[in-house]
Image 1 (tube, rainbow, N blue to C red):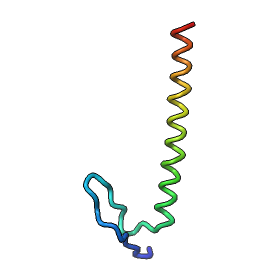
Image 2 (spheres, rainbow, N blue to C red):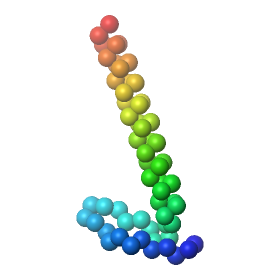
Image 3 (spheres, one colour):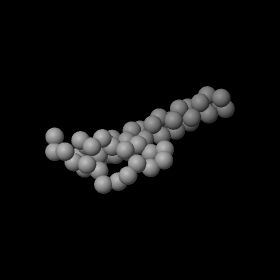
Image 4 (cartoon, rainbow, N blue to C red):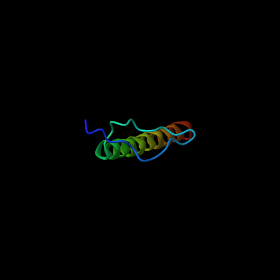
Length: 57
């Protein structure tokens, strides 16, 4: 561990990354969140389209 400490103070309702998290790990988590968000949106969109065509033939 590098002992990296975030320079940001906690914000109300926000999560503070652990002191051991490096900037590279933080960026990797943000990218993972981004791709899971895109995947979740696509799944909901496809499910909604399929449901629409099943209900309105």
